[in-house]
Image 1 (tube, rainbow, N blue to C red):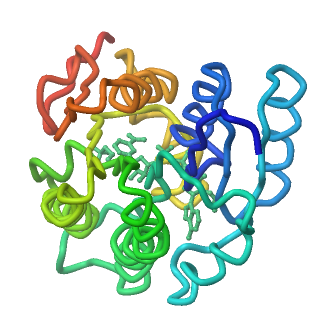
Image 2 (image 1 turned 180 degrees about the horizontal axis):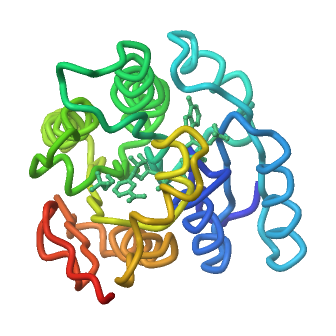
Length: 255
Ligand code: NDP
Ligand code: 8X3
């Protein structure tokens, strides 16, 4: 391996994760890219290596599996085990129903991905950072993990969990010189709403109608900032909002 830094990014096949991959490649970092969709990851890998002199390894993995951490370490391989940054980004919202109409399977998918998936991946990667007494974990939270909104119930709860886990992980890992940060965005136009509304692209589009949402690139820039501060400086929490969205429940839209 060369002397470049290495970032492991989960959920790199789309949206914020994909934008982070491009941003870190542009900054000269080698990449370990995790998601379920192999074709998307391979396309991204090709686009990056065509443009930048960095190494990219694609790891197809469902972070929900309790064996995800073990599988991840096997897929990474010895040569890549010096990881400087883990971006825990893989996540999703499924459905938007009030609690009394909620769909149990949707709840399971969100809890298993956003909470348990983050835990499985962190459990696998954090010991490597502890052993070398350096590293950085950036969890992608949400404004939904700071404030509730109607029918956001379980998705919000998973992001409140990410907020709480970020604080706890930071306390546990600080003695080893390992940084832990949260980047918590408001509305970002990605595949997020298409997934939430189960492939209803028309309904997904209405979420971003009449205002300028954040882009994946905007969030990637914040992650890049947090990841590139001097060793003695840590971003504990960065809440990044569209200007037109002053809080979770208000969006100023033009007709
Ligand atoms: P996208 O749907 O565009 O991307 C989600 C990514 O997560 C995809 O790469 C997807 O890959 C991956 N993923 C989902 N489930 C799994 C799984 N079980 N195993 C591995 N990878 C998985 O959405 P965003 O980029 O918007 O979302 C990224 C993160 O940002 C999420 O945690 C989301 O909650 C958070 N967020 C999003 C906001 C928004 O408004 N868009 C605002 C605030 C936070 P694949 O399907 O190939 O597995
Ligand atoms: C995604 C932002 O407000 O749609 O976390 O929940 S929101």
